[in-house]
Image (tube, rainbow, N blue to C red):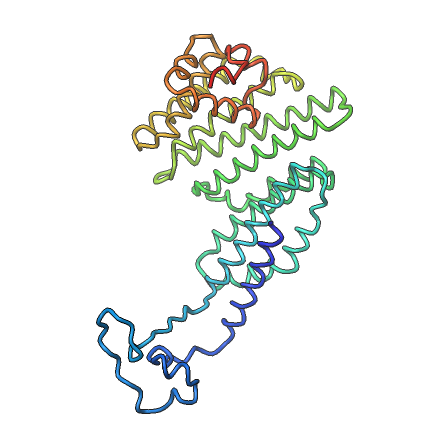
Length: 356
């Protein structure tokens, strides 16, 4: 599917580049009537072309047809190029999870067909920052795919994550760059967890070192989200607060088996309290903005964080209000690594089918 999409984009780009290099279309075509269009360009130059008729609700041979040709600009070319970069970014995500297919063709595709064109098109527009954001996301995704398929080791993957957003972080006032970097840090943590799950044997000293790296990058993700949330005019603040809560839940997970990271284990009460605060803040913001789905998600997650600290029955209250949505939130949290099996037992919802 992705390769078919890339092929369509390339054909579209080829046509656009051809049109971009052509002289401006003769504007006389916009006043040709149906008969003249049928007769061809030679007859179109006749001076006795019929005057446009008034439209009376019924089609007529005397009606004038207008041909509107949208000009191909540098922005048009850049749109198509960035759409391909976005597709390649999605491909890398799938390759990383699969862990079997070599992603080198993705890098080759980008270098051979897109890299120079993107730089050239972006220089002629005022969209250099947008382009750099797209390239940073792609570079992180490519490094992630390389790590997931054992083509890139952990230190190199970490360097790529840092380098991708280094220039974009100079001002520290771009909420989108901060949120994108936080996403990359969270993906970094998830990829390491998959790597540990596939590895036959990890030495204790290596486990501790890797845990410290994961903790560091999840903390950086929290810092990025906090920075984004404090900027004026930031969009979707409830979602940012939800993600801050998620990052605290991920840091807490490091204290559980098989990671058993000592710092995370000792900090569990604080991490859960922080998560609850962020989730409740997200719920308030979502309610004020009439974002019903995000409000429900935040309330369910806040109840889970509270009950994991001390079983107060808040999740049961949420289930009684909205069973289906509460179940979906729990399933999503399991899939995203925010909860594990023994958490469900502690919450008293280990049998989700009975909760729906």
